[in-house]
Every structure is written in C-alpha cells, then in structure tokens.
Length: 441
Image (cartoon, rainbow, N blue to C red; front, side, top):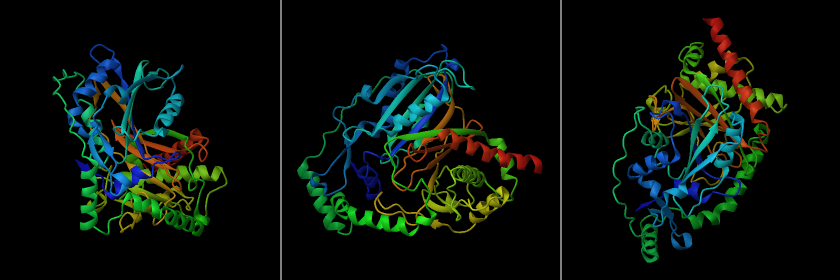
C-alpha cells in the first residue's frame, strides 16, 4: 500500500470540471506489417491483459482517508474490469487527420473516474485518409492521470505495451490475480494520526482546501502584477480542448542546430516553438513587447542536454526571446541561456501561484529509440497531449521516434479557436530556420 506524496496528491485534488491532470499518449500503427495483415481488437485486448502483471498500478485505485486528514493511498481495485478501461471506437468518414485531432482532444478533456484505476485506453479505427499512412491504419490513445506517472513513466508504459519485432509473442498463461483487501477506516485514521505526530509541518488535503482562497488571492495578485506580460493563454481555461501536431525530420533539425555553435536539439526545438508562438500572437495583434517565458520539464531521457544538471526531473523557467524579430538572434539567445543556471519553476502540490509565472509549458516525453510493434503492427507515430490549467493554457509536448521530431500543442478552444492556424505558424517557424540552414550550408 503506497501513499501519494504532497506534490502528486495536488494533481489529484485540483481536478475540476474545466481542468484535469490527464496525460494522453498517442500511437498510430500500420497494420499491414502484422503477420495476417490485420490486428483485431480482441488481439489487442488479450495483449494488454497478458502484460498487466508488469503494470500493477493499472489495477489500483486511490483510497481516500476519512475527513481527508491525510493523502490517499493506492490500493487494489476489488472490482477491476479490463473491459471498462479498454474501449473500441472509429472515426467518422472520411477519417482524416483533423477528425483524429478533434477526437483525441475530446478524449483527453474527459475527466477520469477517480473511483477507478486512473487510466483509459481507446483503440481507434477508420484512419483512412492520412497522407503518409495506408488505408486501415489504427491508433491507440492511452490516457493516464499524472498522479500515476511518478511510479510509471510514460516511456515505460509505451515500452511495456510493445515489442521490438513484427512477430508477436504468444501471450503467456495468465497468473491468477487476487486483489489485496483495502485497509479499514480505523487503520487509515491511525496512520494519519501517526503522520501528524511525526511530521506536524506536512500539509493535508483538508488544510489545502482551507488555504485555497488565500492561494487564489495570491494568484490574482501575481497575475495583476504581471498583466502587461500576459497573453490570451494566461487566463481561465474552459473544459474544451484543442490539439494538433507537426512532424519534422530529425536530420533537418540537426541542420538547424549547426546555425549556432553549441546548439543542441532542445535549443532548436525551443526556437521553433518560440517562432511559432510569436507568429500566432502577431497575427492576433497580441504580441507583447517583452519576451515570453516557458516552463521546461526535463527528464533522465530528455532529447538532449548540455549538462547532467539539466537531465533531472526538474522544471526550469526559460526565456523564449519572442521580443527578438530576427530568427538567428532568437536562436543564439536561447542557446546562450542554457549555459547558465536557470530560474527554478516550482509547482507546490498543484496549488497556489506559480513562482515565477510562465506563459506556456514544454515537456520532453521520451520516446522509443527503436521501431516498436503492437501485435505485429508497426508504430509509425508517437506523441502526447499534456494537461493545461488556469493561467497556463498552452502546453507543448516534444517526442522523438523513428527519425522524426514531433511537436504537439494543446490548449482550450476559447483561447485557441483556430489550432490549424497555430500549427501552420509552427510549420512556418521551422521552415524559416530550415531556409537559413540551407543558405548557410
């Protein structure tokens, strides 16, 4: 029985009707590589069931402590049903990319049932009008709550669900699973009393709710103080999500890196995202005179790093240098700031104001280095949709797979009613840098 810590419990406790802490992983497959040329839903269901022993958290739910005197615990779900968590749907005709983005956004926006294991998986068929994929391709959309990810990293989930060969292994006989009985309310209260005695300084969910109004007031004051720097993405979000993505060749990003000495892939990605955001806000006549900032989350498997210090599970605040019109000057400025210690970006349990505030977030979601297969179907695309929240309504997810760099963005419909325009701005920013790289070569 494992207890949530204060930080992870904050993501769980602050879910609301308009904002939740879902992380959605998107996988698209070419099933023509499967031995029979087709992958059936029942095959995927059996495949997932055969690997549940490797993902024990997938059979566990959160158990609240009475009166919320302590943080909840992960316990076995006595009524776990795989059929509830794995679902089968199809895109309407013609099954193009825009329809897929809309469907993925809707699935991502739906809150998970906090009384069940915090994940859902959707097998989506009907992807028949994708330019670079054959008819009959399908997608697997896996949604997990971020309170789960400290125990199960996103790249670990992807690795466990896939094989390195197009020849699928025969699922091993399932070991019978018998869920452990949950603790009694008396035991939970005893543990809460012991924690309060040994760690009197630790906050509780109940205390967090009491202090929430004060935190909200501080947030409003912080926002008002920096109002001259805020954008449309730093306001209250709605429950409706938008998502889109652009894929780029990794080799072309390497050419962009060569524009400025010492530039790594992270720098080039930041420069492209900065240019895209600058272009979009300029089209709306909303580009601030001062530079915008981004909260960048790094991990042990980040795309590239300048030093071991940045290769840790920390989030740092970086300038996007959107105030610089010249693309080369912007890239050089982004590269230069990586060499110095950056300002920390803290989120205390998901509550209260962000110190210091950022205009958007960017997270590197580690992807597989080798081609992966699901029941023989080759994975051709991998990306992610990240959560957004009030005051932080734009998030970038960056993944690398199969020689491609994928930049995905998510926002709410009210803040970004035209995601296709934002996606084009991102593409135009990349093309601007690629043209400079071509001239330099």
